Image (cartoon, rainbow, N blue to C red; front, top):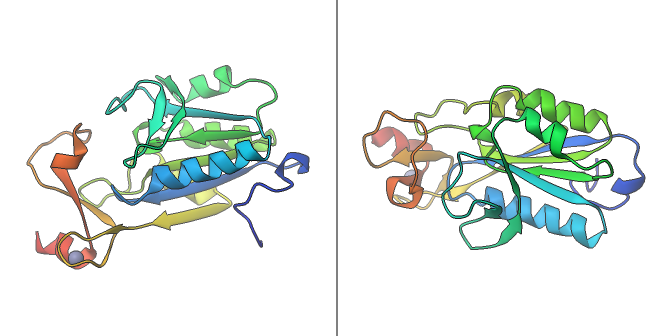
Length: 192
Ligand code: ZN
């Protein structure tokens, strides 16, 4: 569909939809989420943004991207809380750091979309091991639109799809990501 990710005429459309913005760390996922949400706000659509409570890198109540664009958001413990907390007449729901949510998030996204809401989901598609991350694959499979964004490989300058972990650590969630990870292309990721 032409202009499938655009906001125009969204308000009068009957059906909702799911859009996914995915990629590695430093790939600009959150910037793209904020860009789409801002355009929806300019179009006078009602926008609400949620993120998992585990994401406490910078700010408790703002979706913050690496270039310091911010937009107020609601931290929630569980994805099902989104269904309880959205206001009745919301047009667009943004979800950031979706990879840290529980496995119910795909159901929540589809429930919202089936109610006519435009759902925009941003998250890491792979963890540092290169494996699909949390609920992301299931959301991508049921989305109308999937946009994969790329960082720049710090080793060779190619488009980067992996988040290479610089420090050994067994935990999936590691804060202070800027010091702990670097974006790498497939070749440089596998070179270790
Ligand atoms: Zn590379």
